[in-house]
Amino acid sequence: MVVEKPTVTQIWKWLDNVPDPEIPVISLVDLGIIRDVQWQGDTLEITVTPTYSGCPATSIINLDIELAMTGHGIKNLSLKRQLSPAWTTDWLSEKGRSKLETYGIAPPQTAGGPDRCPHCQSTDVQRISQFGSTPCKAQWRCADCLEPFDYFKCI
Amino acid sequence: MSNLFEFACRMGDNSLVLGHRVSEWCGVAPVLEEDIALANIALDLIGQTQLWLGLAAEIEGSDRDADALAFRRDVWDFRNLLLVEQPNRDFGHTMMRQFLFDAWHFEMLGALKGSDHTQISAIAEKSLKEVTYHLERSTDTVIALGDGTEESHNRMQNALDRLWPYVGEMFLNDDCDHIDTSSLRPAFDARLADVLGQATLVQPDSTFTHKGGKTGARHTEALGHMLAVMQSLPRAYPDAKW
Image (tube, rainbow over all chains, first blue to last red; front, side):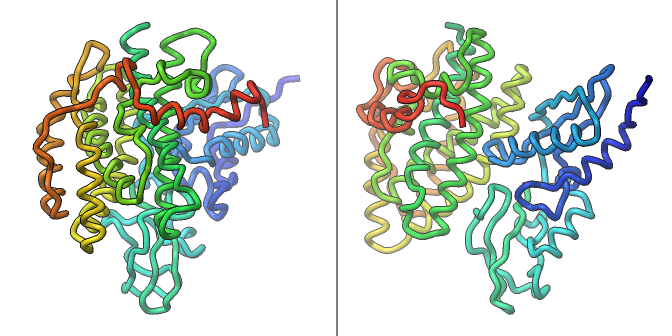
């Protein structure tokens, strides 16, 4: 019996259903860390770039990709790590950015800080710390609604 | 041992030793935000260690991996700068050590990014983004504490005076260095003068420098104590999996 290989487009769709382990409202595709998907003969090769070099989620992400692909019947999978070009928040999808904000995380801005509070949209915001609960986030607060919130660092 | 292996160990040991030192603050930093910031910086540095020591292991081509290099070498095989193994002491001292290292690391990675060795340039490119962020924070903190209260100012000046004899080693150069590290000094000095000026701190005028960390000739007493803690678990339970 000949089983047809799933298309690369189909695989991208599957990957877009694999949530980021730390911020489950966005997918790995939204995060911009899936750099390439291609078939090498009968082996599916997925190229992944790390967000931060020490991010503990990296190994979980690889495991989640493997589980998802195995779940879709992929037998031969090879995960490649690519460091260059280094990951940038410019690769976050538009869908991902708006999902982050709805979730309460201000999306990255080139100005280096959030343009508004993700809760009440006030622009009167202050930085608490350049670092936060995960390597990709910083802590900010809103001077109007007084809520603290996470800001997705722009790198 | 090849020069490239030595060089990858130098880079990896710097980030490993400083990363471990910074992680010693986890749970005991002055305020929660600083605790989180220090832990995040430690995490970045340990991540960079995996890349550099991974490269070293690949160059060596024996059965050692990055973990074996980190946990199964003793003091005499470490190639980190003496600066990064210095104990944390107080928070101001930790941040001064961080600033001096970040300011060098930033220039070093910037130069390595242009290397024609694709793995070295890729690791440098990746690390530079993180280190740019580290430098921004350590610069701000050195200025805030230096130009702060009389107490914080004095502590920062004491930290600078104590750490100063370890600055020169960062710019000593030999055949193992992938680039000419002495060429980084002018940019480092310019930044230092600017930041210390804003921090109202005085740069010591001595040019004496301790050396022997990056060549492995002689480390300070501090490194052995640190490794005894850092390596205790993998040495007690070799090849443990969890």
